[in-house]
Image 1 (cartoon, rainbow, N blue to C red):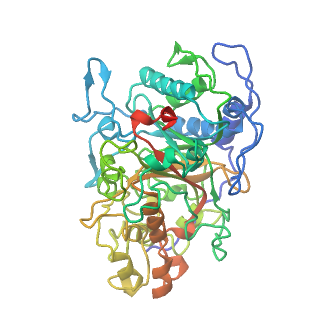
Image 2: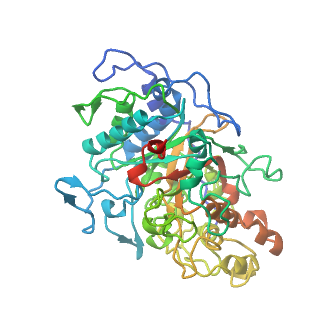
Image 3: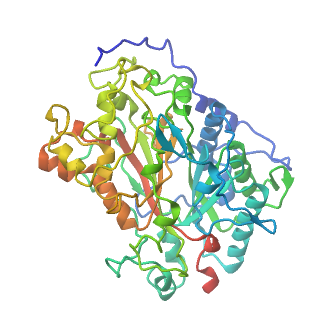
Length: 547
C-alpha cells in the first residue's frame, strides 16, 4: 500500500443541502388547487420501542404534512439535484398491452422486464432499477372494510393510469405487517388468516411471515456485548400495518404521488380526486433511497464529507462497491411462496405470487470504513486492499486495486459476485487461502453460507441502496444510510441469512478479531420489520373481501 496522504481540513463546515431543503420545507407554501398553507413540520422522531403503537392523536393527513415525510422529501430533493434521469432502452421481453390494458405482473415486485436490459460494467453483468425509491410505513387507525379495500384499490389504479408502470413513471408496491393480519377477524391465528397464510414446509406450525428479530450484531438488550464506535443506537422492531414502496427515475413523480395522497386533488398535472382515507391510515416513517452510478460521490462532494475523495466516482453505493450484480439476486419468480419450495403455498393459493419483504434502516459509519480522521487524513486500514476483503472475501481477494490505494476508492467499483461454496467463509476464518494466513471474514462470503440453493443460484432478491438523512442519528445530523430491503420466501430464511452475515460463530471458533469481521462494525441497524407482499390481485387490504 501507499503511505497515508494528508487532506486539507475544510475551513468551515458548509451549509448542508439537506438543511437547505428542510428550510424550504418549513416555509409556508400554497397547496396545489387550494389557498391553504402547509403547517411547519415536526422534528424527526426516534424509533419507537418494541411493542409501541406509534404517536397517539396523529392523523394520516397531519403526518403527511408533518415531520414523518419531511426528511424523506428533503432527501428526495437533495438526491434529485445531483441525479440525472437516465435514457433507458426497455427490455424486449417487457410484457405489452392487451386491448390497451397493460399486462402488469401478478408478482408486485417483478419489475426487471420493465426497467432496462442487463448491461456490463467493467466486465460485470449488472442491472439497475429506478434511481429513486421511497419507503413509507403506516399504521391503521381501525380495521379496514370492503369499502376501504375498494378505495385503496382505486387509488393504486389511479396512480398507474397517471404514471406508466416503468422507471419513467412510478412503480408502486404495497406490503403488510403482522399487526395488519392481527386486526382481521379471529386475529393472527384465527380461521381466516390461518387458512390462507403460507407455512414453512420444514415446520407446518410456523407461518412464512414472522416478525423480524434483532441481528446478532445489532445494538440492544438481546446483544448486551455489542457496542458500535460512533452510532450506538438500539434497534427497534417496528410494528407497522402497511409498507408502501414507490419507485421512479424522477423524484418529482414520487413527490407528486405523495401530494396527491395528501389531498392535492391533482395527479400528473391533471385533476384527480384524492382518496379519502384520513380516518384509516397514519404514516409512521419514510425513508428515501437513491441508486445511480456515481451519485454517492456527487453527494459526498456536495456535502463536503471528509472521506468524499475516497468514494469511488463510478460506484452506485456509499462503500464504493456495486451490489447490483445480476449473479447476486434471484429472479422475482424464484423467491415467491409458490416457487421457492420453502413454503406449503401452491399454484392458485391466495398468496401464491407473494413473498416476505424485509425492511431495515441502517446508519453507515463511513469514517471508520474509510479509516479517516476528522481532517480527512487516511489511517493504516484505508487501503482498497483491506476494504475489498471486508466486502467480498479473502480467499483470495477479488482485486488488488490500483497503485494508488486511496484516491477515488483505490480500485474498481464493479467486481463479480462469485459463489465459491458455502464453506468459503469458514476457510477464510481459519486463515486458509487468505493473504499471509490472516483470519478474516468477508461480508459476501458469509451471506453465501445460506443465501443460495445447492446449485449456487440466489434465493433472495435485493432492492437496497444509499440514503442520506438524519433519521435516528443521535445528534440530528444527516448521515449516509443503507436503505435495505429484500424479497425472500420466508422470514426464517432471512433471519438465518442475517445470522450468517455476522458469522459470530466462525469468528469465535477460529479467533477472528472484531476488526477483521466483514462489515459488521460499520453498520448500525436502527429499525427492522418484516412484511408480506401479496400478489397484485390482492394488494389492497388482503383477505378483507372474505370477511
